[in-house]
Length: 309
Image (cartoon, rainbow, N blue to C red; front, side, top):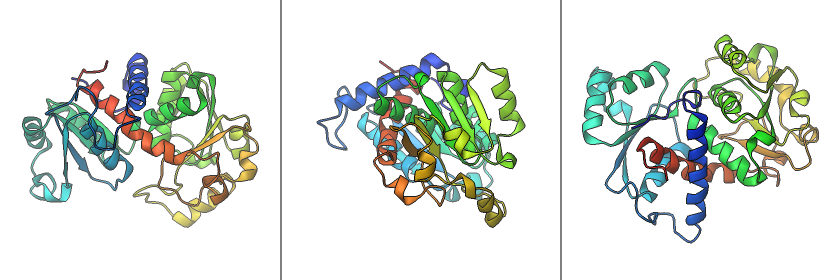
């Protein structure tokens, strides 16, 4: 049994095994319909319990299809209907019940501490579907998408992030260290990664560079990432923050500083941080990026169950 919580805590070899497995599984599904089960039904009889404390579309859909295609089933719980939130039942007791009824637990949470508490008391694998400090499943899938499109290891590519320092960027930074790819971060000075993340960067051999202009970060990029400037539950002066990011909008002019075959990725949902002409262009691969979540999350589930081929 293995957990999948933060990219930084998972060995590089295991991360590569997950991506390799996902590539094989996607190829083998070319002639199968959405709900047809993979050959061998490797997770037949297994139940994935999901709980979402924050809004979710892509993560919810992709994990549902992932476990279904592997031969298992899923049950989604609403936190506002549980004793955990309404009846003050402890995380320990809730975790014991989840462990008795299910075979794996996927949690999208508003608390990193809660994630660690569940891990402490669960006797089944836990997967982080998103937390305030991390979005590991998203970024591992993005590595898969980049290699699929570029047809080369991500270690040979230049990746740029233009936007706020958030949980998605934290996981991208961890991926840069694990997969050894160059990462340029472009964001206003007051929105750079926090001290804990900077310390993590400095302690690990890396190719990460932080700029306070979008152009410097985008220059020579093979891939440009972005995310909403105003994230879920972002408790800030929204007008002021959007004003600080005016010069960091992804438009055709900025894309012109990257390589000619540069692609644009966005974990969605989008906001005003990307111009429609870029989002709807041939360089934009956001829909391919979104559907690939299914394939990678299947391999993440197999990793957690110790069933990677």
